[in-house]
Image 1: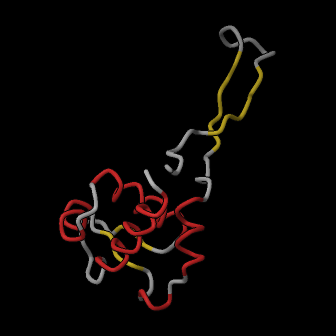
Image 2: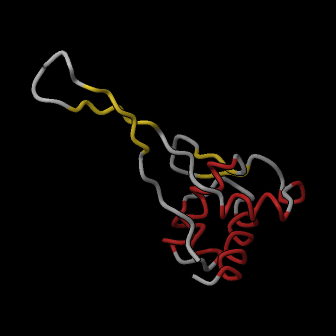
Length: 111
């Protein structure tokens, strides 16, 4: 995905969230491919620009006028926060089992 297209899609998604909207409706109304729309919403949610309500609708956490270009770019190309998973290594329930932490994989920004 071209970076300028991604920024264009991101701004369109932010503008389309005037009211709580499902990703599918947002994708249709703003003419953003659904896959890209979902990716953008995920990145924006991690950055705190949008939040998902209980009915699978997304809404902005502030007005479009309050969002800076830098916030949009940082949200789009930030490394997703990984969650630590605990894994046990060893045979059976031996006392010498080792606990290791592994980062959970997430969707990386495209482009």
